[in-house]
Length: 268
Image (cartoon, rainbow, N blue to C red; front, side, top):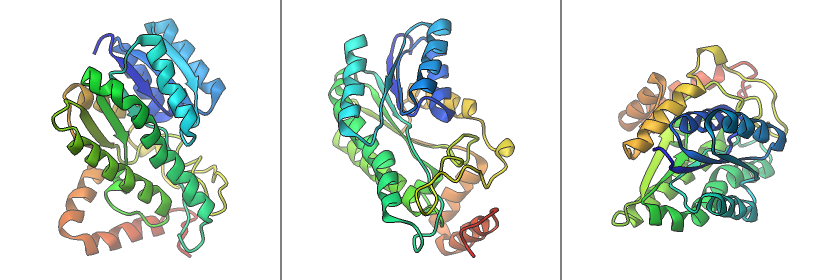
């Protein structure tokens, strides 16, 4: 992977930041993006000082023109793109009966359309390099999670898009990876939107017991290196996907009870 050009969205924190660091350690040339300009620049400066090549491009992936600018910036800097990691995302926590439709649109615009926009503009360069496009999905893209209607919908849509993209390019040497990290210690639950579109600023889970972002980055890197098509992480994540294939009605009850036990659960 040395000197491969890698574009990572949502790289100012969490899994995106961990991926940026790990890929940089392996000698990759990075273009990283996020909405938080200050945090993004801090990550870029750290990576440049330790590993060399990294440029920061502030971007809101829900805006098509900013995704186009991101890809053009990477090509202008390095002349090619070898890997695109669509990591930028946002979650939410509310029952569909209560949630504002604006929250549904916002989550879909970032998680699904952000992936579509970035992939659309990067695809010609990825086809030329025989590169990889990575979609950071979720177990919520395999099993609909109550209280996460917009999040699950966005991840299901992302996975359908990626599966189609993979099949369309079977003979074009394009590698498509759909990664489902499972519950990972990150900031995503604190920034998750409530029914009114405001950040809930708390996590219903014990973050210390969750998989670390650095470990996820290690697995993502190796899945890209080995050109895997699917990656499901954590024991609970693997069990959920497996059992849901054979016992979907039973898993509905298991998932319902799990969410119902969360602090401040949306279930009354």
